[in-house]
Image (cartoon, rainbow, N blue to C red):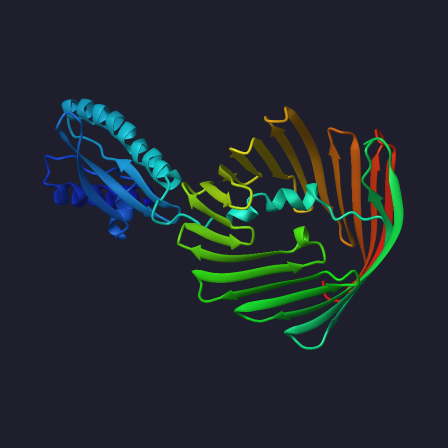
Length: 394
């Protein structure tokens, strides 16, 4: 009796569906009739590529929308329905690939803001240019409030003196003390340094708004060739940035960097040095993907630079660099690493000239770091080792 009752219910649902479709047209499957009675099935009419009509049922399931082909009442309808279902299967996959293509396409109205032209290789410089030193160094930073702090730096070691023979190494002991003041606010900052040898340096930066900022850098020394001043104006757009530089010795420079796609940015620079009657033009490209960042720079001065920075994990980074000077017919290559542990950070570099560099920062406590530095040049037999302590703000 239960089977007969369920059969009658299915037959009644079948007849109701058939009646709603106009009798002669295709009607829904028996399995989908309960869904239709619950209001979860909607009937849709489709036209296949041959211009013939057939009917589909759209079932609203929890997993999403699914299509259930209807059943025809005649053999001719069965043939037409099978052919139409095949055509629909092909057409049904087309929007899926089209949707993927749209997702991968670049929205040129929503390109990201690229890095500044001067910071083109900032990720690689962290690994390839560790701040090595020789001797002892002690840095102390004392914050007076949230915006103002004082810094003290003491260094004792040796300095290499230039000689006529590059293989001959002459070092003399030197020591220096540096006093600094830092004022950092929401829209700008002022940084000043003074050394015991008479050199002074300062930097002032002010952000007028999110798109425009000004920066002044100056360095004064007893030797005229070491004194310089530079004034910068930085402009940012939605997907580009530019900079204008004016300095002493009649120096004028401009650069521009533009995002072309979500991952690629192109730009260039030009400069003119009036005191030496020299000028140059350079071009740069930067591709930033998920695993790595690749950059390339070329200039009319004869320099070609290419770098690649690869993120192995959240704690391990690798970097490589290739430099070529076609005027001097010289080339060099370097490989660097940056390993970040829970309590320390290790950076190192190996270049094609045989120089091996390592720089270790060990965190002893909050705001207290122990520093070890080493640089080995086996070809010139020049070995530099240093240790130090950094106390204060990180």
